[in-house]
Amino acid sequence: MAKKAALLVNLGSPDSPSVPDVRRYLREFLGDERVLDLSAPLRWLLLEGLILRTRPKRSAHAYAKVWTPDGSPLIATSRQVREKLAARTSVPVALAMRYGQPAIASVLAQLVAAGVDDILLFPQYPHYAMSSWETVVAKVFAEAKKFSPAPRFTVVPPFYAEAGYIDALVASARPYLEKPYDHLLFSYHGLPVSHLRKADSSRVHCMTAPDCCETCSPAHATCYRAQIFHTTRAFAARAGLDPARWSVSFQSRLAGEPWLEPYTDRELERLPRAGKKNLLVITPAFTADCLETLEEIRIAGREAFLTAGGETFTHIPCLNDHPKFIDFLAGHIDAWISGPPTRTNASAL
Image (cartoon, rainbow, N blue to C red; front, side, top):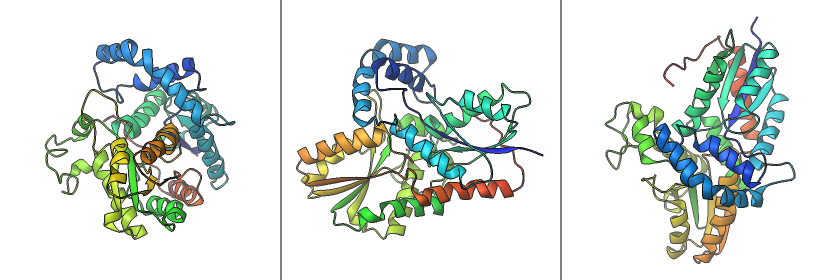
């Protein structure tokens, strides 16, 4: 009989906010061909010749602002999620990070050594992107091929449209929505426009018309932009939001090529001028608070908004270990345990 386990995978963090640890982490993260979508020689030149000469010091300073006694907030929160989930399920629950520790390779080795041969792979990304959901799946399968026999996998697809995810988002945000505010900004992680076009198997839909995300297409199965708009509209409907009091923006861009717009940093400067003085910001692309939500939004974003004339700024925490999110994750695992055996084919990755 197969021995089952669930494997949660998130982005990862450096081991500490020191410059050497941050440089090591960035080298692994930005060295991923699905993150910096360049030829290997150009990616190496950009990394070693420019990014890793300047960015580690700046990023280390940012990490130091959000580091906790338990270490990285992303890792600490992910461990709490794993522990609460393990208490709810009848199978072991493991945790790995795409970059840094605990590494996918070592966690898989531990599972296989324990006799696990049937794994539910649960990327902690609600929306598809080759630089998030896809790279996790590709890395897990690449490492799994080193074992003979390799374990079976069932992969949870992007869950951006699932009712349980939307319900958890709304429940986590409800206490903030019930207080007075002028505007709710949905800030999603940005992507290069080229990533959307590359993920479009038809090559003729994504970013070809202003309403491409509202026009039904098979391309939406791998379209980050269409999926984040779906999540946003579903959230707004479920929460009963006034359409005039919310908008979408994109954060965390790199220079050098077009990224999804509008940019969050510019929106934080524009909104006070538009009379939106009391702002809520929610970051649904992230399931756990991390550098991009805590430092970029809650600290730097707040400062930018208030400097531009805003009066109150509130970042709604990510799902983290909210009970509704634990319910959602546990429901997937329970359904997998009781369902028919399946195996995911990663040959397309």
